[in-house]
Picture 1 (cartoon, rainbow, N blue to C red):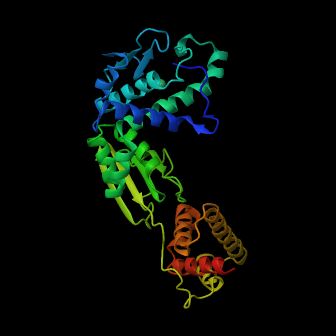
Picture 2: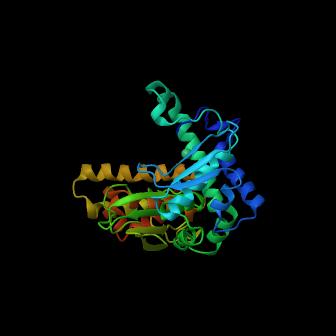
Picture 3: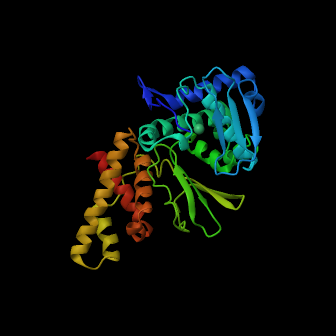
Length: 338
Ligand SMILES: [Zn+2]
């Protein structure tokens, strides 16, 4: 399916946000609560057929904006939670007013039409996904869960109460969480299938399609994992702040500490010099990132510096050195007074 006319923003309005707002209005109109009766809601707006489709697609919507009652067709071969999300997604195409235009099956498009339509198509799909996420996992309900429990427990609530797939739940949850959250999905052999981080998180999310390192985010405040349908879901909550504010009296000069650490790790003089420059580069980068995000407390900058060094394999032994936290404290203090 592809659609004409699907821009990202119109006059500065994010159309994914608009799609979410439309879903919220629809929910209020039907007075539905979690688990949302998506099938019941659909029947007000479209014909629904749940039938086995022998291809790799989850659902389609036909006859939008042509005067006839739209038809939503869902593949009955997909798991129940995925079916609910697909149904909500297709309903999004029916309800979102600008998802009109001409909807064509991909097979019927020639190459130039496909290229012209691909951006519009991807954007419409994002909007329909945003609509489905809001319909099944309403923002206000989700915000309350996030307030009350840890990310991994919120994730389980989304799966069990909202009845969405672990995957759809994780993708929606990571967007709603405050900075400092990271998740990964792994298979039996610890291969990362999917991973992400919340907005404003400085740590890098685990790399996809490689083995999850067993020492990932050792500095995390909390780590929890659970298994669902053969996959393991990992959640880390990284510290937003490290150390006390203003405790600077006993700090040794950071250059002295850096010399000591690097002296323990690198014997070659030139290599040591280069390594120290790189360390300072990392600190400078994190500091400017923090300033750009108007993060100014020393505790928050210390946490960000610790995250950054722990992310990089080349600094693994540096970040594990017994004097590393002293270095971070002194270096960040010096940035504040410079
Ligand atoms: Zn779609």
